Length: 556
Image (tube, rainbow, N blue to C red; front, top):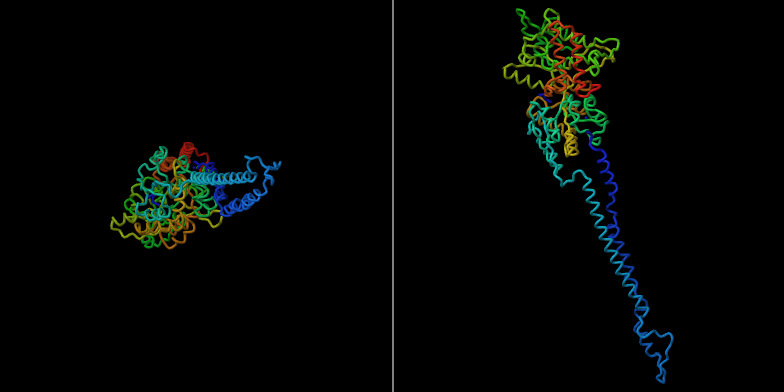
């Protein structure tokens, strides 16, 4: 909330799934067949129900043979050719021995089958365990770098997850914004970084080499697009993969001092023509001795207007500038002046002697000026609400302010739909993480409806006014009664973004910072007599250098 793409090895994954199929019938192994009860019964019947022939009559036959032996009455011996040799074995004895041998062999085979089944069963079990990413007995530690939330706010949802997944430990650490992007990338490159971390929506082309591509079984493309606002699908997708999950949405809003507008009988402007008319009327601008005392709206300069680059980026997009190509590329291909018109319009609010004049560099920073009642309207993200309230409180000022959607170009047809500006933070997984699957599963949990609602309630306990605005479309109605966030959520479906976002803490060499520097020089050069065309030509050349340094051939 507060400012305050490589792929997982699919081959490995497929291999793991294939192994599971091959061995998925481990219960029907040789071991299992051999130990089934019906097989025991059959085996027993084979050997118990068969006895050697005539086993019961062998003794009586022997007696009979004695009485009818080969002795004659005279005592001579009748040597019958059928009499067995004196020392030869009976054929019945041989048959009995064969049966015993067969029985022993069968028992040995049976035991061998049991032993084989045992080894097969354990082989399958071990193979499945090896192919499984993590079982419930394997300890997984996920290091999570956050930016805005204290440990206490995250504790509830983290504890809930750890109870459900006792083998997973989440170590959350709130990071300083100082050199955050540089520290993050360096740590990941050393394989010492976090498993999960927060990054800005505009950073994707800058840190894609450190980001893991989100698996399709976490969110399919269709599910992602149906769950989150369109700007997230546009910003976070590269080469067919998504590289993060947003837990919030934010963007520019029009902050207005309700008391000042009411006292001057001025309506909240909904178009840029309305804004210009408010300046024309001089009802909200007070000039004494050529010095601005109060201002209608903070526009026209750079150094003392927070988010000036976001404001100009919004105006460029609204006026049809194809920022992903050139400052001189317009939706209406017959013209090349779309950005020139915007820069001219913006700067006139800081040009003395023009009807639009209502701001200059002598006034306090726009956030401070609004919080202390010196400017009636500003453009800023929703999170600045807390900054404004804190300044007003410390200044003992009872500030009555509200928010509205940003002004649009006047249009009564569907050919010019509203365009709003997004700036938000995203959770990603490090490419070097050893527990990527577990990390993505945790992020899927964090982005669920129930967990988002719980996390929001925990944030409310601390911030009181509101928590991080929901990134899920199906939670929009939950914020419809919050007069600070309702305009933001209403604008979210038509939000766009670009690499001109302020306060992303990307460092001097970051994509936003470098782009903003070129734009800032263009605005400031107008005060030195440089034409808007020349100023933007220089900025455009700078933009292209930035694109090239980050390998952007067609900016998203």
